[in-house]
Length: 544
Image (cartoon, rainbow, N blue to C red; front, side):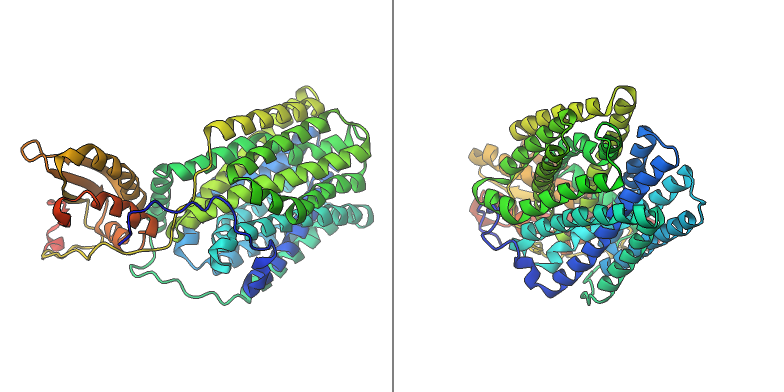
């Protein structure tokens, strides 16, 4: 039983070196494999955007490539996240990489044969995006399995550095491939890189999942994901803060190629240099800037600072034509990008319990990818209707406004203890309950001194969220008018198996401590009396 103390805040990162996660052999191996995959992905990004231009596409068509990449994630990531919590995560990741390998390989073959059209380019890019949708939440969810909890922020930073170091290398390699063998070489490199990720995952000997009640059905797992997220205000704050950042931030990724081709008058190698400078800036930020800032700033302050600097960088890109200065501005936006994305991702990973981590992180992917898909279309349309400079300028203003609004009204919450805990006693039943019996009404009788009624009711409010997060569809707290010392807590769960998951799989240390705070008000230390009531109109076979 918890002591009733408030969960400790873990808002600031430990003083461990940024390189500490590399001491974990499995994390190191998977990081290297992912880095190879990221290089291929960024080389493909350059190739696809440049090929679309060669096929006659304008600013809007080029921006649709970003939509084709992100929209499948927006549509598929929620069931994919639920799969990440109910099947073996390693096998799921291998399947996702195989899908992306197939999409990139097909694109390479068609492009070598001069058979690629704008429509085919968008479709095959969307297939690769679908594979990414299958992988994204699960890759985030496995991080706490690979490193100790206090190294998760450093792991998130290193994973972000992997993407951005690849951004520094991949576009340059992609530009060289375009000028030497054509965009087909970019797609071939991407296909080979996915094969490397598959090999790295295949070498991971992940322990088998322990599920005392068996795996959930996909539909039930998705319902649980929606229920948890809807009743987790701390996580919703992280999602809102992420959306404020990513909606205008997508200008850089969707329109930088248009800026390079048009106002800056650069070729493919020059565009690769601009993307590479963003990556170099992110890597420099990872090593030299962000660790120092994290020792001095809270996560809330760091995200606000990074968002504001990113917005200023977008505004500067709208005004600058001197290419060396543009390169510096891209590097600064890279530092800001990694500071924000690594911070919110690590915060979300540490905020979520393991039983729902992949499916809840799917909502983070929806926020990022949906924001990018929407932002790409809106900013692409603005660039086509007015100018690419106007699109960058508008995005910069929105980013700065979002940074101020987020800092003032969407403060990132402190972290609690989400380690699994079981403190409820097993139900003592005379009637045998079938797993799908339901709904189930649970009543908990609390005897509390009436003088403590108001404080007790306040202590029960967080438990309302806990009950709903873990399975309850309805919750209430009532005081007996004839016996003011008697409080009746009631909550309803859809099925008996769902309620048993509350007992066995979904409780955390932080939840236990919240209940301990409520138990502090019990009159005479008498334990609450719990009843489980099954729906009376079940089929006869359910009553034995």
